[in-house]
Image 1: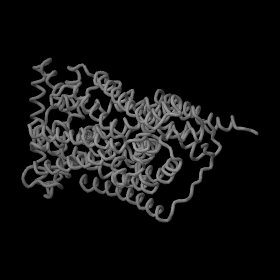
Image 2: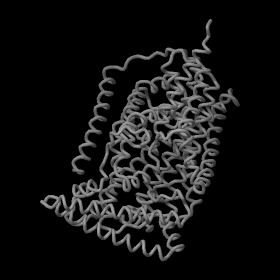
Image 3: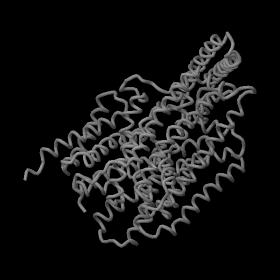
Image 4: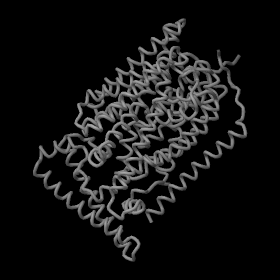
Amino acid sequence: MHSLDWFILTAYLTYVIWHGVALSRGSADTQSFFLAGRSLPWWAVGLSVMATQMSAITLIGTTGQAYDDGLRFIQFYFGLPIAMIILSMTAVPFFYRAKVFTAYEYLEKRFDARTRSLTSFFFLISRALGVGVVIAAPSVVLSIVLGWSELPTIFAIGLSTTLYTMMGGVKAVAWNDVKQMLVIVLGLAACIAVILQSLPPGFHFQDAMFLAGAAGKLQTVDFRFDLSEQYTFWSGTLAALFLFLSYFGCDQSQVQRYLTARSVDESRTSLLMSAFLKIPLQFLILLIGILVFVFYQFVTPPMVFNPVAEQNAAARAPVHYQQLKQAFDDSHELRRQAATHYVNSRTLATGADGKRAFQKANDQFNSMRQEAVAFVRQTNEEPSFNDVNYVFPVFVLQNMPTGLVGLIVAAILAAAMSSVAAELNSLSTATTIDFYTRYVNPQGTDRELLRFARLSTFIWGLFSCVVATFVTNLGALIEVVNTFGSFFYGSLLGVFVLAFAVPKANASGAFFGLLCGMLSVWAVSEFSNLAFLWFNVVGTCATVLAGGSISYLTRDKA
Amino acid sequence: MKLSYPHKQTAPSKKWQSLYVLVAANTALTVLALIAFSRIFTA
């Protein structure tokens, strides 16, 4: 990176940490530290909700996914606005009026202490491992692309975020989220502007879209009802609805965001703001991936976007590598000519022929790229090798002007830090409220609780960094974390459905229902090929059915 | 404080009902716009 990029990046990070620490003056008691004294305006809470959900994985991963697979991923978000409406009507007033710090605290009021402790415990495990992945993903990618050392990158992201979260509490998290969202949106807008400027002369946005459309990148909605297919209209609308209901309604990292709002109505408004903006924002991110695809029609792309893996492959099998590289460059040149011809002839009578020729050249190019990826996978002895996550950072580094590289790297770090901060803050809240205050020090003074909250933030931050170092070495651990999350989310939602909607549900029903739900998801994952989004539906339904039945069998007959 | 079911839950006010309808309609329109976008540039 150029020194100007370094300056922008350093200035941004210093400001974020300084501002977070400065807010520690306003977090002198637990109400302020955990709930910002319920003083935040709806727009700040709404932006914080969105920033928490959008991690660096979203920014790096989905742009790369759009480059490879097109816009199909947008379907994943169709259920989100519906979830927000349902939660605005149900969970938000329940939590807000129950005057709780954590979602699980509510479960003790409704059921018993063991249900609260079990759900909070599962939340702590899944979220702490999740934070490790959120830190590790951008660290691995940025260290490879920018040549940084992996370990210092992990600890720089993890500990700087821990520092301001520990000092400033939820207020620092939320106000930094607002700034981080601004940096992210600015970075994305700059990317789009630069790519459009970089296209050949006379080449407009609509030409870019016709080219992407001809390559099959603009297929947005798939109405096939196939339960094994991950992204369809039905999985995005129905199955993802359950996931979002659970994530925004039962996961402390999100519930805590809207408990900081000034009133129930402001909490609701913050969720509806997210409902309005999420799909367009996600479309913007995916559009960047599409535009990067169009950009690389006219500029030779790297054969494989992970530079280290490509160098390894070239060193281990130089002859085969050179042959592949030559064939790859030739197929790119053929596709470039076909793309130019198609765009120039699109409105003419020969447009259809031009389109077919481009599609054929694009298919050949894709085959070459698949062959190259398979070659790198084999020579690097990494069966799970996938270079999708490297597309966007490599594009930025090689093609964005000086200054903007710093801004976009800052945006990637901002996305990571906003998620990590909110999650650390919620981990600390759950540890302090659901365990320390509940079992260890029920009579603790505000000062003692605050000290423990800060200490637990630091410990969770450190723990997440350690997890992140393992994630970088053990690729399969990411899968374990995601699978554990999907086992848990649907079942957790089931417990809250029992609490809110089943009047006769009792504590035994909720406790054993949760375990039955998780067991059902495990069975389905082992013995069927159901796409993982549907696990949330299975978990919720199994928990509600089992919990309802157990409640009926163990009902108080007196 | 032990919460017993049913919790007090009132129907959303007219203002909130309108807002929910607005968000639902906006989502439906967004999905339709995405389908149209896809059709226009894929045709």
